[in-house]
Image (cartoon, rainbow, N blue to C red; front, side):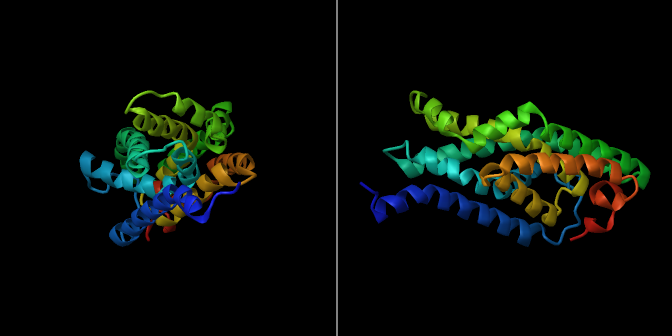
Length: 252
């Protein structure tokens, strides 16, 4: 027996709501920060304000690729679905908000690098590209990506969580796997510019392709190889890392 149209719409609703939330975050980024010079520094923000901006960035970039998992998780919920999905999503984003703490420290350090001669910035950019590229090719990346691409096993795990903390634990657990999968891609913003909207769009597309496209693993490995190639090329073309060398792509 097939599901009726009403049931189908209810099952699709969590994914739609996450996409709407991502669209709102993108809209805020474009209208609120689109004219700002991209930088790896803290944008003149203190830690609390930086974490707010960082979390909005992560919502914009990560929620589209998380929508299928959220929709699958919602099918395991029979009561108070909307409220519980909010808890799941908030817990997911809290993981990325916590990741904003080391991101802030890194932004402070790299902001100082951006003030150095282009040669020094190119050397740091090469390290950023190399670390990101190598991680993309590691078994740990494959393991985290596999959990994001085939989350049925995770759903069985989440179903075993007892009590009212189930949605909080499930959202945080899935967020941890996404962080393990995608931190290396976020690291590239250090080279391209923290508020480089074009780089954010490109990386969000890569993240979504890695998790959803049939050839997602190939996409991940291709990006890894390309990042390693950029680690070499940036010495000859410093503008490839505008966030660290002051190249032409740094302004939006």
